[in-house]
Amino acid sequence: MAEPTPSTTPASGNGSTNVFIELRDVYKRFGSQEVLRGINLTLQHGETLCLIGPSGEGKTVMMKHIIGLIKPERGEVYVDGVHVNRLKEREMAPIRKKVSMLFQGAALFDNLTVEQNVAFPLLEHGVRDRAEIDRRVRAALKDVDLDEHRNKYPTALSGGMRKRTGIARAIIDHSECILYDEPNSGLDPIGSDVIDQMILRMQRRYNITSIIVTHDMRSVFKIANRVAMLYRGEIRFLGTPTELRECTDQIVQDFINGRSDITG
Image (cartoon, rainbow, N blue to C red; front, top):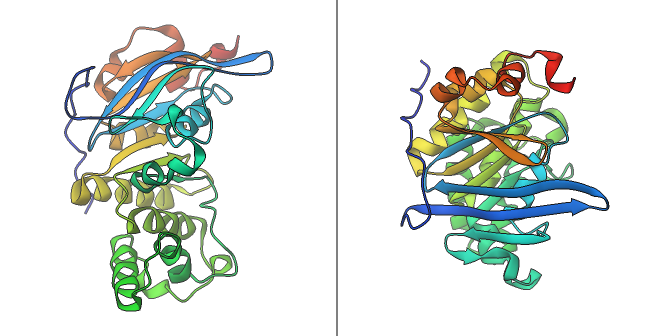
C-alpha cells in the first residue's frame, strides 16, 4: 500500500526557530556565465522541497553550496544556524555529517559490498565498534529494504537498488538532511515509485529534511511539501504543489506540462 503524501509544511521565514537551511541573496558565476542570480530560500526541519527547472539552470550548483563544495561569489548560506561559506574545508565535517548528498549514480565503491559501502561513513568518522557498525548497517539496510542484498557488490544491483544503497549510506550517520540529485533518473516507473516511497519513509520516520532535484513531475506532486523552480538563475516559482498546479505563469506551466515554448 502506498504511504500517504506528507502534509504541506508552511513556508518558513527569516527568524523562524525551525529554519534548518537558508540561502540569502546567493550569486554564483563560472567565467562569464552567471548561474545563480540572487537566490533566497529557507527550508524547515523535516520539509521536503523539490527543485525543478530546465537543465543547466543551476539546481545542482545550488545544492553544492549547502555542503560547501562550491562557495558563492556573494551571499550567505546557513545550515542549522552556521554560516557555511565562512568555514574552511577542515571545518566542514560537522556540516557534512548533518547534510548528505546523494549524487545521480549514488557514487558507490564497486570494490565494496553493499554493507561495506553503507558502513563507510561510520569508519570515516572514527566508529570502530564492530557490533555497533553491524547493528547500524543492518538497521539502515532494513529501512531501504535491502538487508537480504547486503553481501552483493554494486555491479550486481539494479539502478534503483544502487540508489537505495546510497540512501542507506546517507542516513546511517544520522544525517538530518539529504540532498538528492535526480534520484529517479534512469529508472522505470516502478523503480521510481520505490525511491519516492523511500523519501517519504525517511521523512516520516526520522523527520529528515530533503531537497530533491528532479524532472519527474509525478514525483513532485507526490512527495513535495514545497516546490521551487529555477529559471535563468532565479527562483521563478516557490510554493506548494497545489499552488504550482494553479500558477498562471506561462513559463512555469510550459515546464510542468512539457511544452517546448519554454526554450523559445
